[in-house]
Image (cartoon, rainbow, N blue to C red; front, side):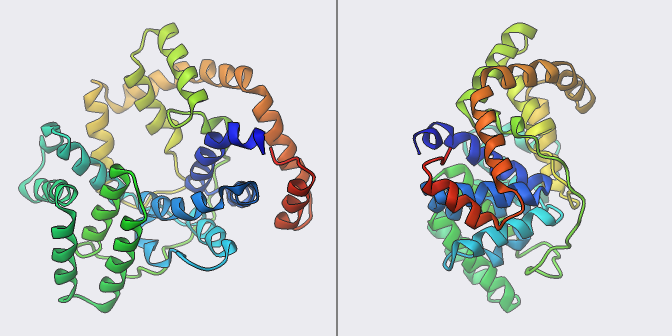
Length: 316
């Protein structure tokens, strides 16, 4: 358990990366391991945020109660599905405007600017927003009402303002986007290999250290490098449905660091070998423990196998 506490940020980061890339085996392994190491409540809470960030149209299926296996099954369904990133994009832009960054409105038409201003206002006056959105859904289908109800519950269980903004954006988008089926997004079988080193990004202390080292070696600012790392590695998905707000977020983020798509991709291609080499060198023990965990899975039932690992005090 001591090892898990020191490795916790790694597993928390890896879980969402595995969902994004559609690596169902890794999602199953990491989620159950975290649960058996005492981090199951975090996984349960984070499942709501992962849903709104990666595929908000499936939020109506979030299992707030029930068995932990229900949470894992929901994450597996998210992993198998094409991602729909509009809530993440709009929420991020709205949060930036709320923080005073007027640049998010540049080049947008009045309707697009209105959406961002609405989310910024929702962050500032949340109770007014929820009263307004519940009145709005009275004129729509009953499924819209249940969706917004789920969004409000997820919002109340979330602590970080950024995450709250994404949920509010999802609640609003559910009333204006044409979504034929809230309950289940189209499933895909395309899967990207999720190598464990990908978890070491700006969301982990180890990742931040490697990015800072890379920044110094290549003469690239940390902000620029962490932004490129996020959009060209950490946020890669197995398949993304058309998500205009996500595209707008990426364009705005790259504009802030004065790079276009081709330039940013070129920078990441150049520094990636250095990043991976240093991550593997400086975090060898952690990666070794993770490989041991993977090998213990074997061909037996995963939850039973992990329980045996936990009971033998080998919960890495």
